[in-house]
Image 1 (cartoon, helix red, strand yellow):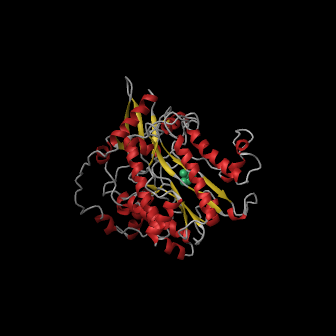
Image 2 (cartoon, helix red, strand yellow):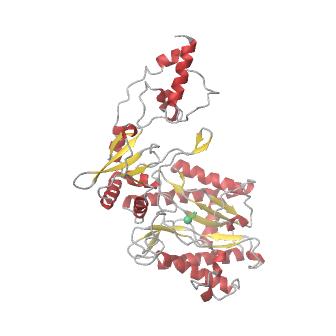
Image 3 (cartoon, protein in one colour):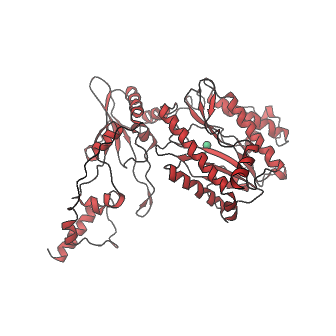
Length: 476
Ligand code: GLY
Ligand code: MN
């Protein structure tokens, strides 16, 4: 074979293995003849060790049964999703669609572009099949030449039989999947999308165990931050140091963060989703840290603590802090099965209205501020809701109907946040000068029990006194 022929083969090979239609060849080294003749040989057999079924498999099967019962006779398609381009030929880390993870039990280890299909069977019910791109044989160019999916590049990929055994579901190669007219496809079909979102409102035992784990790891991440406060203060962009310290814990013990960490020091705490995190952490200020570890099953915690950087609250900071805690405690006190989800928010907001009125911040009385039609003046200082469901998504069950969510009733097994706050912007002329630039949020994750709620994050210090003792203990 001439050199030219070799080049032709190399060009064909890379064109065939690339997902991009006209791949840039400016830094491709051609594979010479000797490489192509030898690359596919000399590899030991890989005996397939079939794993035993993972703990989540039985739970995922029960969830699929619920979906099957709700859509008789219909073919349902639940894609895992694909890579998302970050720039040029780099992608964001792949994360499976939450509903796909919920219905398969395949989470941080899911293969991109997989599809779960519910095939209706005569006589009722469905057969579920998980289609995935099985690893390519070592005789293929994909193996050595495809930087996105080739095992030479990204490491071992599972075989169909292994996935079937691990997840307890039938598997097939993605090339055998065909979309059909009439398919109900997740995210395209509103009824299916709503159903699988509402299916996650009440957590099963596996989910509750995973949420407990996510909170436990998150607690260790908060301990890491507190223990490292002296170094954080000494770092010019101390907020980034906070983000990085938490990230370390999230990656070492979990899949990562469930959402971008908010490390908001001083007046930044008044920006509810401050994720720029490029500020200094200055003694005398408060720092608000809102962070949650997503564990390998993809369940995430969502916790906020607000810390005095110097270790002790000033009198004004303590007053504001303890008022937020009073609002949170009021929310905890009403939460139990049979109560409306919105009642939890209303209990917290009643405290916020009462105290901001007492401080002379409102142009109306607390009762007037709480009027559903004409009030709301107190919400200037807390514009966000008090609670959201929590699970595989930080804002879980997002496609549930309002009747099932905000206006729905609490049920045993639901998990949600309680996270009131008070935020006095640095340039807010309606508040006394000493309030300006102070933002406080306290966020806990709770599980609805038979007669109330259990605070899953109770082990993380929460009162002003506990917070000061925590800092003294870990960072002194
Ligand atoms: N943790 C951010 C939020 O709940 O919006
Ligand atoms: Mn939250």
